[in-house]
Length: 181
Image 1 (tube, rainbow, N blue to C red):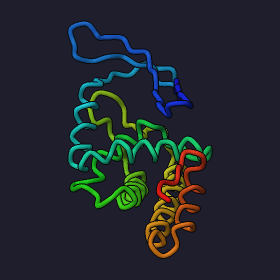
Image 2 (tube, rainbow, N blue to C red):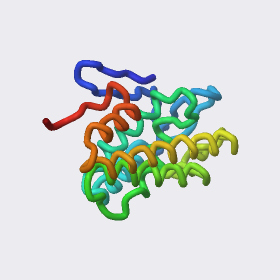
Image 3 (tube, helix red, strand yellow):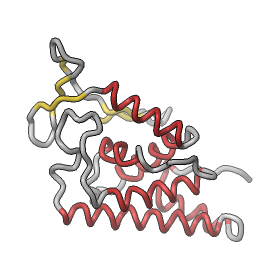
Protein backbone atom coordinates (compact mmCIF):
# COMPACT_ATOMS: atom_id res chain seq x y z
CA UNK A 1 0.00 0.00 0.00
CA UNK A 2 1.31 3.45 -0.90
CA UNK A 3 0.70 6.29 1.53
CA UNK A 4 1.45 9.89 0.62
CA UNK A 5 1.17 13.02 2.75
CA UNK A 6 0.42 16.04 0.57
CA UNK A 7 1.45 18.70 3.10
CA UNK A 8 4.92 17.29 3.76
CA UNK A 9 5.51 15.44 0.50
CA UNK A 10 6.55 12.34 2.47
CA UNK A 11 5.53 9.03 0.92
CA UNK A 12 5.79 5.46 2.13
CA UNK A 13 5.14 1.98 0.83
CA UNK A 14 3.64 -0.14 3.61
CA UNK A 15 3.97 -3.91 3.34
CA UNK A 16 2.95 -6.49 5.96
CA UNK A 17 5.83 -8.77 6.92
CA UNK A 18 6.11 -11.89 9.04
CA UNK A 19 9.37 -13.00 10.59
CA UNK A 20 10.52 -16.51 9.70
CA UNK A 21 11.50 -18.27 12.96
CA UNK A 22 15.18 -19.23 13.08
CA UNK A 23 16.06 -17.22 9.96
CA UNK A 24 17.02 -13.61 9.28
CA UNK A 25 14.23 -13.28 6.72
CA UNK A 26 10.65 -12.16 6.46
CA UNK A 27 7.73 -13.27 4.34
CA UNK A 28 5.86 -10.55 2.46
CA UNK A 29 2.87 -10.84 0.12
CA UNK A 30 3.39 -10.37 -3.56
CA UNK A 31 0.56 -8.13 -4.68
CA UNK A 32 0.03 -9.45 -8.20
CA UNK A 33 0.19 -13.20 -7.48
CA UNK A 34 -0.92 -13.39 -3.85
CA UNK A 35 2.01 -15.68 -2.98
CA UNK A 36 4.41 -15.07 -0.11
CA UNK A 37 8.07 -14.38 -0.87
CA UNK A 38 11.17 -14.23 1.32
CA UNK A 39 13.02 -11.00 1.84
CA UNK A 40 15.53 -9.33 4.13
CA UNK A 41 14.97 -5.57 4.41
CA UNK A 42 18.32 -5.10 6.18
CA UNK A 43 20.18 -6.27 3.06
CA UNK A 44 18.19 -3.88 0.88
CA UNK A 45 18.79 -1.03 3.34
CA UNK A 46 22.54 -1.71 3.32
CA UNK A 47 22.66 -1.82 -0.49
CA UNK A 48 20.59 1.36 -0.74
CA UNK A 49 22.82 3.19 1.75
CA UNK A 50 26.01 2.05 -0.03
CA UNK A 51 24.63 3.18 -3.41
CA UNK A 52 23.59 6.53 -1.95
CA UNK A 53 27.06 7.03 -0.44
CA UNK A 54 28.71 6.23 -3.79
CA UNK A 55 26.47 8.89 -5.37
CA UNK A 56 27.55 11.55 -2.91
CA UNK A 57 24.23 11.16 -1.04
CA UNK A 58 22.32 12.29 -4.15
CA UNK A 59 20.77 8.94 -5.12
CA UNK A 60 17.92 8.98 -2.60
CA UNK A 61 16.55 12.40 -3.59
CA UNK A 62 17.01 11.62 -7.28
CA UNK A 63 15.29 8.26 -6.89
CA UNK A 64 12.43 9.94 -5.04
CA UNK A 65 11.94 12.23 -8.07
CA UNK A 66 12.04 9.27 -10.48
CA UNK A 67 9.52 7.33 -8.37
CA UNK A 68 7.22 10.35 -8.40
CA UNK A 69 7.61 10.62 -12.18
CA UNK A 70 6.81 6.90 -12.48
CA UNK A 71 3.60 7.13 -10.41
CA UNK A 72 2.37 9.84 -12.76
CA UNK A 73 2.87 7.65 -15.84
CA UNK A 74 0.06 5.09 -15.69
CA UNK A 75 1.50 3.33 -18.73
CA UNK A 76 4.72 2.53 -16.86
CA UNK A 77 4.95 -1.13 -15.81
CA UNK A 78 7.68 -0.34 -13.28
CA UNK A 79 7.25 -0.66 -9.54
CA UNK A 80 8.94 1.44 -6.90
CA UNK A 81 11.14 -1.40 -5.64
CA UNK A 82 12.17 -2.32 -9.20
CA UNK A 83 13.33 1.26 -9.81
CA UNK A 84 15.21 1.26 -6.53
CA UNK A 85 17.05 -2.01 -7.18
CA UNK A 86 18.04 -0.94 -10.71
CA UNK A 87 19.33 2.37 -9.33
CA UNK A 88 21.88 0.74 -7.00
CA UNK A 89 24.43 0.56 -9.83
CA UNK A 90 23.68 3.97 -11.38
CA UNK A 91 26.48 6.00 -9.80
CA UNK A 92 29.97 4.56 -9.46
CA UNK A 93 30.89 8.19 -8.68
CA UNK A 94 28.79 11.18 -7.61
CA UNK A 95 26.98 13.19 -10.29
CA UNK A 96 28.10 16.78 -10.79
CA UNK A 97 24.75 18.26 -9.79
CA UNK A 98 21.12 17.15 -9.49
CA UNK A 99 20.22 17.75 -13.15
CA UNK A 100 23.26 15.77 -14.24
CA UNK A 101 22.31 13.06 -11.75
CA UNK A 102 18.70 12.98 -12.91
CA UNK A 103 19.73 12.61 -16.53
CA UNK A 104 22.26 9.90 -15.65
CA UNK A 105 19.73 8.03 -13.51
CA UNK A 106 17.00 8.05 -16.16
CA UNK A 107 19.56 6.95 -18.80
CA UNK A 108 20.91 4.20 -16.55
CA UNK A 109 17.42 2.92 -15.75
CA UNK A 110 16.42 2.99 -19.43
CA UNK A 111 19.25 0.56 -20.21
CA UNK A 112 19.02 -1.50 -17.03
CA UNK A 113 15.30 -2.27 -17.51
CA UNK A 114 16.08 -4.22 -20.69
CA UNK A 115 18.01 -6.87 -18.73
CA UNK A 116 17.00 -9.06 -15.83
CA UNK A 117 16.76 -7.74 -12.28
CA UNK A 118 17.51 -10.42 -9.69
CA UNK A 119 16.55 -9.94 -6.05
CA UNK A 120 19.68 -8.30 -4.60
CA UNK A 121 19.17 -10.16 -1.30
CA UNK A 122 19.18 -13.45 -3.21
CA UNK A 123 16.07 -14.66 -1.39
CA UNK A 124 13.10 -13.98 -3.61
CA UNK A 125 12.27 -14.21 -7.29
CA UNK A 126 13.70 -11.77 -9.82
CA UNK A 127 12.23 -8.34 -9.25
CA UNK A 128 11.13 -8.20 -12.88
CA UNK A 129 10.00 -11.81 -13.22
CA UNK A 130 6.52 -10.88 -14.46
CA UNK A 131 7.58 -8.22 -16.97
CA UNK A 132 7.16 -9.16 -20.60
CA UNK A 133 9.66 -8.07 -23.24
CA UNK A 134 7.04 -5.62 -24.54
CA UNK A 135 6.69 -4.08 -21.07
CA UNK A 136 10.47 -3.80 -20.79
CA UNK A 137 10.62 -2.09 -24.18
CA UNK A 138 7.83 0.31 -23.19
CA UNK A 139 9.59 1.12 -19.89
CA UNK A 140 12.87 1.62 -21.76
CA UNK A 141 11.21 4.11 -24.12
CA UNK A 142 9.54 6.05 -21.28
CA UNK A 143 12.77 6.27 -19.29
CA UNK A 144 14.87 7.20 -22.35
CA UNK A 145 12.36 9.94 -23.22
CA UNK A 146 12.58 11.32 -19.68
CA UNK A 147 16.39 11.28 -19.90
CA UNK A 148 16.19 13.27 -23.16
CA UNK A 149 13.87 15.85 -21.56
CA UNK A 150 16.24 16.31 -18.63
CA UNK A 151 19.22 16.58 -21.00
CA UNK A 152 17.40 19.29 -22.98
CA UNK A 153 16.50 21.12 -19.77
CA UNK A 154 20.14 20.92 -18.67
CA UNK A 155 21.32 22.28 -22.03
CA UNK A 156 18.79 25.14 -21.80
CA UNK A 157 19.32 25.93 -18.12
CA UNK A 158 21.78 28.76 -18.82
CA UNK A 159 20.52 30.04 -22.18
CA UNK A 160 16.75 29.78 -21.63
CA UNK A 161 15.88 29.10 -17.96
CA UNK A 162 12.09 29.52 -18.41
CA UNK A 163 12.09 26.87 -21.14
CA UNK A 164 14.24 24.55 -19.00
CA UNK A 165 11.87 24.96 -16.04
CA UNK A 166 8.92 24.34 -18.36
CA UNK A 167 10.40 21.02 -19.50
CA UNK A 168 10.94 19.91 -15.92
CA UNK A 169 7.44 21.01 -14.90
CA UNK A 170 6.05 19.02 -17.83
CA UNK A 171 8.08 16.00 -16.75
CA UNK A 172 7.21 16.12 -13.03
CA UNK A 173 3.95 18.07 -12.90
CA UNK A 174 3.02 19.70 -9.60
CA UNK A 175 5.94 17.91 -7.88
CA UNK A 176 8.33 20.26 -9.65
CA UNK A 177 8.93 23.54 -7.85
CA UNK A 178 10.98 26.17 -9.57
CA UNK A 179 13.65 27.66 -7.31
CA UNK A 180 15.42 30.93 -7.61
CA UNK A 181 14.32 34.35 -8.91
